[in-house]
Amino acid sequence: MITKNQGVKKKKAQRQITPKGRAYITAGFNNVIMTITDLSGNTLCWDSGGSSGFKGSRKSTPYAANMVGVGAGKKAYDLGIREVSAIVKGPGNGRASAIKALRSSGIVISSILDATPIPHNGCRPRKRRRN
Image 1 (cartoon, one colour):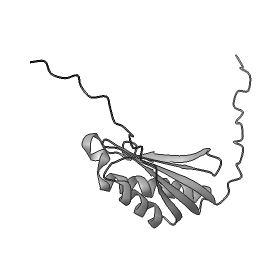
Image 2 (cartoon, rainbow, N blue to C red):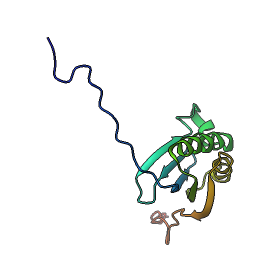
Image 3 (cartoon, one colour):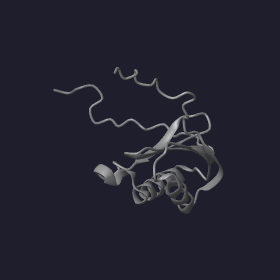
């Protein structure tokens, strides 16, 4: 039985990518995630501590962040990204090492912005203890 479009491969549409982009680095207590987008916000590539092969508490180490930065930087460089502005979010250990690794992969970092969310008044406190 012959099915429709059997053996026919569709060509993937080539994207026109500008050499500038944004690198979003989320460094939490449990993982480091780097997403590289174009200037309009479309995701081009990403990498994380877990996808780099680390498990458990090793995902959030500076070494794992270094590997994430190198991996995502290499993917972005192959796509044609040459300059990014880094947007860092979160309190994790791998913030600085992810940026250094991204720079060592051949991508120029034009600016670094810290977008860590800060609570204005914090959480609601517990109710008072009764005597």
